Length: 157
Length: 272
Image 1 (tube, helix red, strand yellow):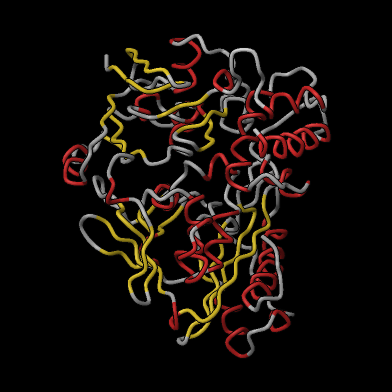
Image 2: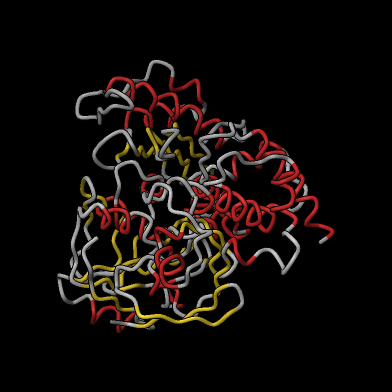
């Protein structure tokens, strides 16, 4: 079977995979990084969102072997030893989650959103940019508030 | 999904060699291919990933032609200053495909090779009278789309770029899409272009394949204004009908989206 090497959350990793092994399977099953969730497995819900070379993508629709040499960041890569990432802190502060299943994807998308659209995000922009992430609990209001606050907080971080 | 052998060639020549086998399939962004493999709708002995071939990616302008490399992701087209200057309607279209995460990965070449009847890009390719370039030949938009998930591409043929006429050749263009809210595919999408040679109206989402709405073109050739489409109708016979919209509903929506696309082309707002 082929091997694949990439950088995940700053660490060089490699593993033996099948052609069909998805990036999300590699992250969860080979590396034990189970913060990245599989919700729908049909690339609609966004729970599996990670950053691939700095861009948000759905890791359930990317082959692990396509990521040879890539730089991957997962939800586990955001916080430092004892300090949450400002976007994580904002989700906690603004109660941007209920069951929490979609949260890793929401936060990875939110951080991507700041990269793409800047720190000063209005509600309309946030809702449009979150189209790839589905939450079945919250009704999104608190998520939108959390993203807005997190984006602003990232300016100072 | 069934397992397959994975190839990641660094050059177009190597990709061509690996795709000479009819059991092998090119992989671009994978936003349609990987889900279809998961459903076991398709099975291939090998996938040939085009992602490492640098010459297939990027956007450049050559005089009055905008050249978009086949593996350029939608987000790159949407965010490109070159595209915004040359063909703002193409930028609007790309910004409305799927969601941000899909736009970061999905590619123009993959979209048109897949030829989903509800995909956005085919309407721009046909509307703008673009040329699809492969490693073997150039294919006119009119000859490219053949039916549901069917194109003029031969086995082993790889799209390398899409060449869009721009500048004085394309005076004004607009795109309006009535999107299916869950999938964000086009329930119907209409791309309208005013050129020196006349108006072109290309419709996606409504039929098995993208097509030109000639009655609308005739009306808009007389007067390029949304009101010129009052009373213009599209025959619902042969249009798609599904759980989301009947053929009659789609026929009506096409005319309405055509009006909005004209308004967008005229800078009067509009929707996507």
